[in-house]
Length: 166
Image 1 (cartoon, rainbow, N blue to C red):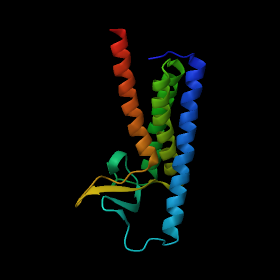
Image 2 (cartoon, one colour; image 1 turned 45 degrees about the horizontal axis):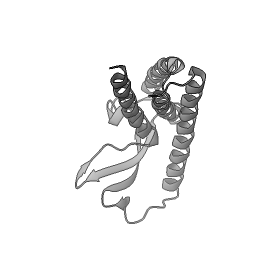
Image 3 (cartoon, rainbow, N blue to C red; image 1 turned 30 degrees about the horizontal axis):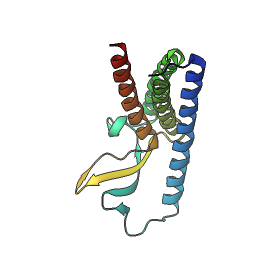
């Protein structure tokens, strides 16, 4: 894995994070506008394995603690996410691998995108519903996808660095 100057790596991670926040908020705004117009006919089915839905997740990942809900919980979840983002930014400032910078940027951007929803709406907007027959994966959004891809890239970076060190 190539090592790059820390300043360039930090900038790369921040650019990825900013791009994810913007794309996440744009997709959520488009979905909210789409549902506000009542644009769906023939149900929410887009493909045999995919529905477009509109849900508000007041809990954490995959709707965990969704029933608890409430404005106080939105603030609490936002504060926890903010602390995690601060830790990730510290890690990003010390990163030397471009892949790790992209991974951290994806996670930070996804976390910030969801925090924006919690602060603005009191819940996270989810709209992607993939399923196999009657089995549905919990609805999610672009921010959630970025977080998952970021974690996968982080694991890949760790494996590649371990291999190089050997």
